Length: 350
Image 1 (tube, rainbow, N blue to C red):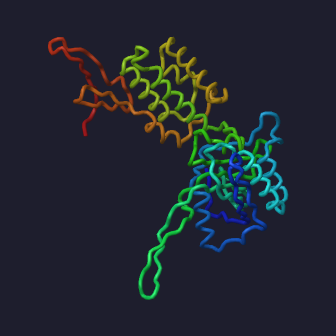
Image 2: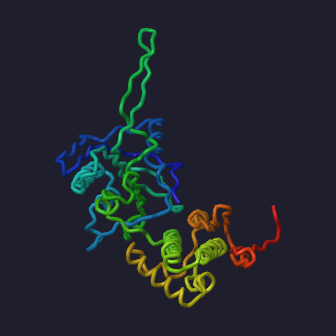
Image 3: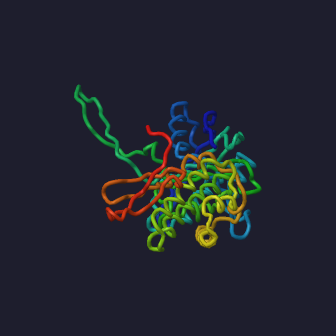
């Protein structure tokens, strides 16, 4: 979890980075900005930190050696000697420009910020922030002139809309630091160069990541495999979803074998689930540690019902919402009426 209540902006510099494919170039500041006053500091802190929830933590990585990751090296130099902040901010700008060749990448302002006293996972540390603003909003401006009000407009940055950013926390340097990132413009699109090409990050395989990943696998399995196209009845899908929700809500620790016994149960379906999971892991580069026991993250417990909507639609008359314990529902056929039916068992009515 992240906490910025006592955090302050210690150093700040702004450069402008264009699109390399269009040869727009880089405009570098000659000096750092003066430290902002309290009010500007509050606005900037909201702009820079509000989009980060701290749930997914990343580490810098490299295909050959971590030391070859450019941003990791620049951050390491700054944390090792704060006086190198401005010089390394120029290296950050040049590296971003070098990676900004895709046609969809816009020119924008690059902010490099040194933060004091951040809290990540209950640890107090400094952090380096790298942010880019690409879009401008139009704002109305009302001015009083000769006893009359006049309307005008100007382009500006909306402090509620950070386009791209990352926070690099000065902890776990040997593992690639703890890093959080956001990309509101292209979270997974064609120009999603920010996380993969510019920063080159891997997800840190902690309990939150494992919990969310396994839930995503279950959701995809219920939608893609337990479908009518694969000759599975709707109640099988609903049964699986309801039991999955119940399992994650009731358990504190996740045991993959226990999940298979209590939720999937049938040997043939367990084998099909394992095959589906292995293919999903390979496609999305999920580490094998997801197959081990782990603590179920509380934040994921809150999300699980939103990801699984156990709904059976009956003609245009009824919707059955199955939240848990699907054994209390029985399906049948009424020969006299020549209609299907569901029988529901319950204790109290409210």
